[in-house]
Image (cartoon, rainbow, N blue to C red; front, side):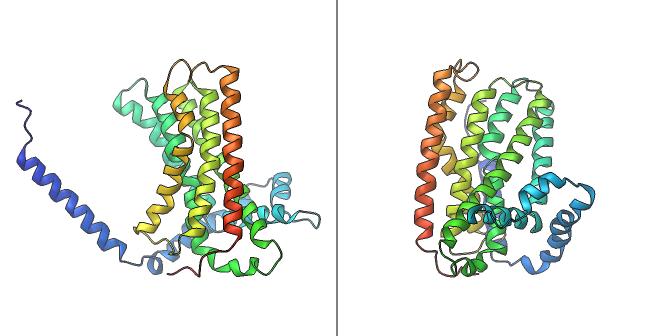
Length: 299
């Protein structure tokens, strides 16, 4: 081989990329909701409604979904958001994503015959897959709940309590599903070489991606549609933002022996970093979004 590029291969690659761009632009102008809504209702919303018939956890259900007169407004909104997430199909979709990602991460190393792949898979799912869960919740929120925000504005401190409950609901769902995904991959790999750092990274990515997802869903004026730029922004902004804020932890995760044998002082510093950044970001988000929401979202 002389190292020169094949003109024919470059031409075919350019033609292929142009075809993908043209197909994407064409699909972005099509409204799929009218045709896929019945399918989505049957596939995503009906199973969660029937789930309590087969899985009955009275203690957990009573603690998470039962609204009591003495509940604080933010706790009440947290329970209402959890109820909506279960009913609008978001939970069922998250379960499907969890199953697909788990199968992919456990099958790919065997197909590629890479022995060290579990370490890469664990980092990939924490850094890339974790932001997908709040992004999915935000997209469904914009479709089903965004137009009802005027009801919240009729009460004192309604937006603040609404946002606080939304954050806790998103965070709970994201942490649960991301932890399950990490646990399944670790069981398949039969090793957890960077457990402490991975837990810290998973916690940080969950908090930061949830905050970015809430910010994106409240600030973008246009509702996400299939294949549209706005739908990509709902995923890319939380993913890139959470990776950027978690960069110090990612740096520690990539270098030995810090990742495999972190010192107590290092773990303490990481915990303080996550706490400070989370509190500051949360307060800025609550203050900026509580001042006023954008105009009615365009469809």
